[in-house]
Image 1 (tube, rainbow, N blue to C red):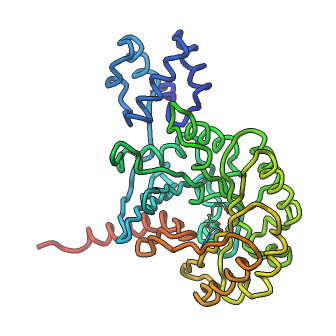
Image 2: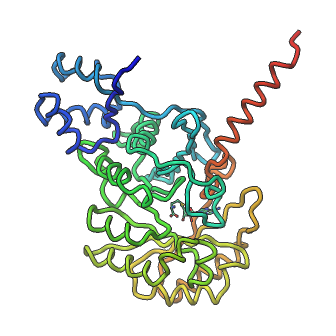
Image 3: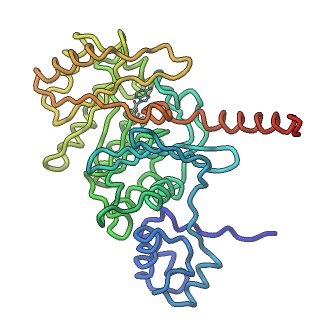
Length: 368
Ligand code: SAH
């Protein structure tokens, strides 16, 4: 059969959806109605969108769809963390993680299958780069998680979104911008810009561009206070060294009042966690409105790195605090379900292959 593929409305920014409705011979405001059904009510079935004329519903059923990725695995952790393994297509899977913390519920989403950046302490880098996620696949993660977790006392359980799952969001620029628009649109998820964080390893030109295009919260994966060390840990540094990264950070904080940056710093035993590194870091960040997040390294099979001991992390933090930097140590969460930072997927495909092997094996076991 040679059917034209349906238009997936999930993840489509409002202006694009308005243009789509106009192309169907409809009024643009239909986009807002349909978006409310999709995002507020979590409805994918056009037949249920009862305030929309039947003729339009029929048109939509024929030509469009609201299609989220398929859930392969859905796992809860003892600490309330929740992880979903989602199938993107026959070959690709990604992970999405929900992290509750008091009133706040953060969903950590992926922007790519795998990653091209090769940061030496990250397990996603191990699997290499497969492909970019579409805006539908990015927003699909939020849609699925929101539908499952829902509301508590009239408020959404998911209050914050961070692009800290698999992939480098700024290497998938166009689709990430679309997703940001839907996340922050009043007819989408209506999240404030402070609650949507883009985390980047420092693709400097894309940082400047995004800063011009949209408002968002910025996290920078710094991990080293000098180029010599950062060249090794975050190899994109060879292309965009720390001085250029700092310029992009300053451009971001200066664009609007009261802005600050989250600086991410993974604590690697004996590698980047010495007093000297803390002093260099304080000097580098001196004056920049920022909050430093120290992330205890999460080991994965085959990694040469170890997590810094807690006393070392505390001593490092104390130096930064004495130099006037707001510094917090990130708690590791979801360890028991491999949902912690840097532990995401790479396992997805292995797991499914392992599952296939096991299934093949099982059929050989004689049943009585
Ligand atoms: N590519 C983006 C977003 C994905 S990584 C970026 O680099 O920011 C999200 C965060 O997890 C980053 O700060 C990353 O450096 C950190 N991370 C990656 N691997 C980790 C590991 N094994 N242990 C702890 N943190 C890790």
